[in-house]
Image (cartoon, rainbow, N blue to C red; front, side, top):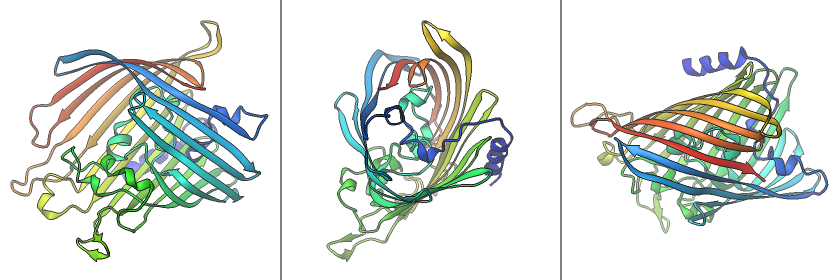
Length: 389
């Protein structure tokens, strides 16, 4: 609670921020708001980068990757009925996924029915994860290791916003198929929510018990936004052909996110806590509780005409991160289970326009295993480009 109060104070005592909320991120894409002529639009983004990393001084050398190529489809079917879809290609065609395919029916701004494949409203990053929006090439650890971003699910529910005199209140509430047994039955050998995203989840629920997700956020028109979110349900297949074979085991993710601006400096972050019902005979290995967070500071260093582009910006950025995969103690010894990562990253980005970023990053990580053996140090440089089209 002290952390949430501190974040709220930061948000309330800073200077002006734009009035868009995290809830609006999936529609705040240039191919939609710059399209004035037709009811249907096609767009997307691409992300490519190079990598040079070393682990304890040992490197596999320089490599390049086409990390993502995403295609967006949008259509206004009739006024207040909208369709949005996103098809993602990762690492060329190594992984192809239908990330979004949803229909929104707006009864009024405070009550919108949404159904289809929906980006789960857990944290702000999961809803606003498009690479061109970020100065850092790597996604925050908390958003990939604790919250299994990008997380999309088949489901339905409601969202809306209340426009009040001094602030904007937004909410989302949906039912989904949910995560599966892969949270613990995975090749990682630890509790890993990312592995709970089975391929079958877009076709059926593994246990017939829907999961629930909700987010509520407060956005002041002058100062920034703070959001609280939840996602949870039953993850294990506790019935086979109608027969109960195991007790129901629950999972939950709770997150707090915020963004604000001090003069020209953007400050944003996200913190999340996972809890899991783990069978008692494996709870030393598979953590019952995980948490992590990041804090990011972005400041424009130079702005104005550069290299022939009239509205260029060069940004500098700092990101600090921490994730703990198992907050518990060993039952046999009572000693702490470490299994954590600390990370610091620096960014320098050049934006010829707001929709395109040329990015140079440096990252340094300190990684400890569960037993607390000598820290492994991972460091490296990355250079790349991300652009909407």
